[in-house]
Length: 451
Ligand code: PFF
Image 1 (cartoon, rainbow, N blue to C red):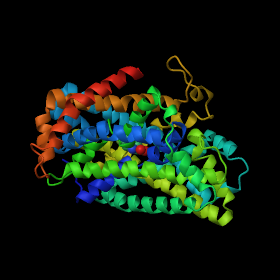
Image 2: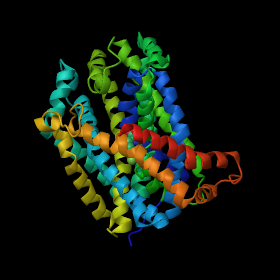
Image 3: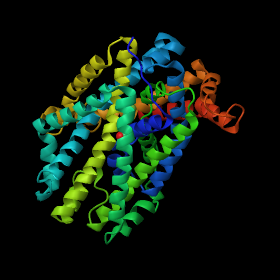
Image 4: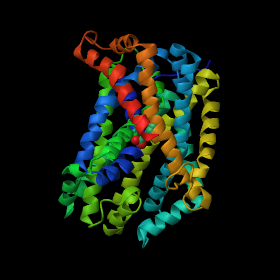
């Protein structure tokens, strides 16, 4: 049997899990979603969900993985039989589908980095038209997504310790340095404080049922929960490590980066008098205009640093998404890592092709009507099914599994390895109640509301 591999240290696990969590969800999505939904008011609700639901689910995934020493399918099957195994398989499938479109957006970031650093992006006249043409160009999409998937595959090929842990230990600190650097620069610009005010003064009038739900979805996506990513990473973690403190650091790092991404973007946006509610185009349309206004040299430096940051964030996430499927084939089908990585990376790249085509290249994929409602692009549709719906559903099923099958006693037992005084503590009681009652009820209710 191929060796499963494992992290060499607690820091390695934390860097890799934080790398999985910190991604496009934090830097691309969070600022514009928060910007449109009440700024700090949204942030507060987001933090509430992270700690109330996200944290217990995160612990649930890590403990299940570490206890079973297996991929999501193997872990559910080991303690719950074949039918529960299907829940693990569904998680793996969600990861595959998420990676298929996530890699396309990562390809855009990669292309923008190359165009900013080595090309003439900043000489364009209309960034909105440029972005529209760029995403509609099939060959650009194909090459950049292929390139990004190839980089991901090369790292995952190196295995858990050398590839996943080794790359995260370099990419995560680099990401922080670039992020802090751009924030400091942005805050010194005239008009920056208006951006800080816009971002940080809460506007509760924009909060309603839909925003509360979208904050929960954002929390799940951002922490990489609900598809077994942390079951897989947990299975590489040693029994000696303290899961509670590691998970706390991961949740804090993820929330911090999302928060800081807003603090980086809004001062830049306001310093150029641009609209803060640009939506998904905030990063690809508004920011290039801002870099352009900085002048040719500074614009190139800050602009390419920004897109490099986006690529680093995306890369540690695509690595974790690919590893979930790879772990399944290594554990269950006894494939060598090399074969599992090459086959899955190529297959997922191919599955991403309709998502690439849905931005103008093929009309029928641009507005796909799968169910009643507004037509969506193929990518939005896949994102709705496998991220917005599937991740909270995966969290619901995990908590149900722990509550009814694996038991909170085992959950608690697994956490207690590597901790002192956990058994009988307030924290133990709190987490057991959360995972057994609060998570299934809240997530089940939310699921019913979405479908
Ligand atoms: N957490 C990543 C982000 O915020 O961009 C996205 C993600 C990665 C979701 C890995 C799910 C996953 F398993």
